Length: 437
Image (cartoon, rainbow, N blue to C red; front, side, top):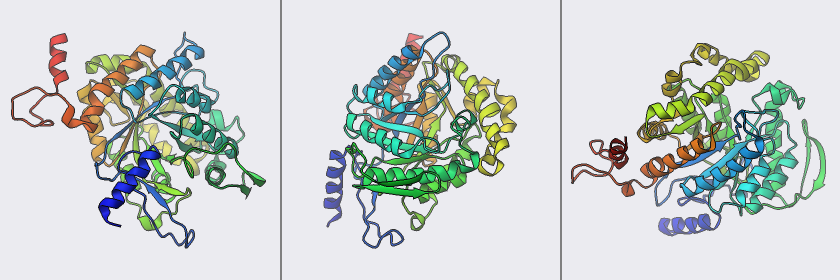
């Protein structure tokens, strides 16, 4: 088949399955799996080039003095607005036993609420706690929400990173990796096969059963994994999973190391756990605020910056490293940052962990992340008043996303003859800011 016809056909398939333009269906002989098996690959090279995908990440953080009732309804409105502002995806992670910072113990309920109010935006489980929650239940919830979203669900798995949850569910730290890997294999088979059975070390014996309901997407949604170490990131690539990572305040060099670790795995080493390969590397910003000035953005981000840095650097990850040096030992590197948690300006500028500033600052940060090899940027916009979150969504949607995904359409001022994107030509919002302020 000629290349042009093959690309056209692939894009038709992608369109009807809700995939972005440029997705190609490739045949890869992987003899280690089956001599007859054909593996699909989801990636972003195609006739229209690569667009950077922007994803909103929330954990239903609830401010003191407010209620979970109010936060959940605001969260749905934020997801609807994110779709209007041009974000590719919206997602939340699974967390249990938090009252303030992360209040999403039943993400499938939130996804259903958002699915019924939106039409286009992808809905990604940013992490399902598959080391603790039964994988058959996760598969059933994934399929049900895929139905309500008309095939817009994406699934990310994680082994767990807080003792608050793992201890409560009785999951030993030295078992989290094995339990999560066995769970993902079971989830894929339950979603993909007409019937499945299981006999494993951690999830026991399951006689032959048929999973219901069935997903809209066939054979299953795209699969991702959270990676916070080089080994974990390379494991994601070798298993054919998309990867989401963060430098965790350790700077640009650490993010570059993580993204390179994913991209440098040879294709010959990829043995997908799913029925197709998801080739995608995402970088996450833990705190994101975009306002008219850097100072205003920092003021609106200060509470979240300090809370998250304190919890992560001083408590959660360090506790994991102390309890399980073999499984979580790399988190010990955060100990050296304990004296920095009160330095707001350092937290804002130390690297891509934090994206707090005016549109120009955010654009520079995102551009650098893209140049390091990420094709997705996950922005945690949470733990603030509803109006502050909506302002950040609007500023990123109006000024940041078009800069990357519709550069020719961005109105710019300056001397006639300078091309859009020329560094000598300021963006139009810079002139407007001078007039308004």
